[in-house]
Length: 264
Length: 255
Image (cartoon, rainbow over all chains, first blue to last red):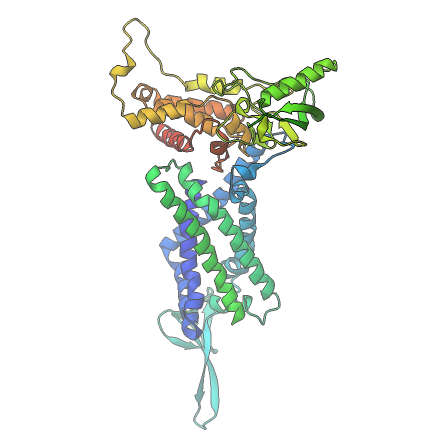
């Protein structure tokens, strides 16, 4: 639990840094930054290995947590008629299993909303944009281009076709001439946008889930060190403060992002 | 402070034996001196019950000065009652007010089956201790004087603090998981810190943890309740030390 928990804490930092691209840059620049980040995350071989370690860690953390909770429940078959645990322990510490289950529910919906669309169903459209140029007669013509990996602009017309999700081919010659980006940025922006009817619910659910995550980390961060035997007079205070700071700052920054997108 | 008398209502767990179902029963007890200890109050209640030709309440007690680890009792939702750093026998009725309702329950743990009423069988702790909580000493007549081994003062102090554990089981009783890690952590630590204990350190921690799991105690989730409720102030540091010892032994032991 401790090892996977601490690994997942580092995962949170990485994920957060990526998400911050959504609000740090605006307009086409922000869209490009985020989609490039998404491309890197889904294509870099080291990240691929890391993502599998993350999936396994989440599963192990959840399954091990469930098994331990079952054992712990069995250890006290008859509950106390009168119990006063708030006198000896913090509330988050006593509700780690409940908090963890809620975080797991959030992860499931979160993956269905974004990860599944990006990786499995490939519903995320290609990153393209429209350029308006006057033609010979002076009429404004709108031409749509794909934004590609090798900094080419490839027009979205019959001369070019998309294969394997994002590969751009010259239709007649069947030659790959570039690779486009998936426009995850637009999917995220629309998901949390005011124009979307379900966005308010999505934002509230997201923010609430970050509160749950915060409480989970409030106990979990320092607890992991204790489980690994890292309890030392010199470092305990630092681990405690860093853990509580982490539990506040990381979920807070995550939660701010959909709120900003919604209010835009 | 002058002694005064209070009238109280008690809700006490009554259970004939391990195989029958128990229930909370309500008793009224009048004129309890605030100078009496909690156990003396129970003695007073038992006298009342005997006079009424009823079965007295069974509860564990021995030294009545907080060092034997015999008394237990989950009082108003806390192990050894509302005070910290004390056992039930050191709890006095001046902690309660006139008209109070006091819940008295036995330790609740699968590994501590109820013998009768408030008495639980804590022999699981003995079996854990027997699994490794000792140092093997050759008693052939040339036993070395323990004081001839130099031991850093800090280590000796920490070992002594761990050895202050009286094995009462309050840690298990107050842990939401019914975990015995504070007890086992203390027993592992008191030897792990001393040179005499280092010889058998690996087997000790592995055997004691194995026995702890076999007894059906829960797992530690570091809520810290045990440390707060422990009448001897055993520190969570001992659990971390046991975890270190366990990791070290698990990695290097050939067993």
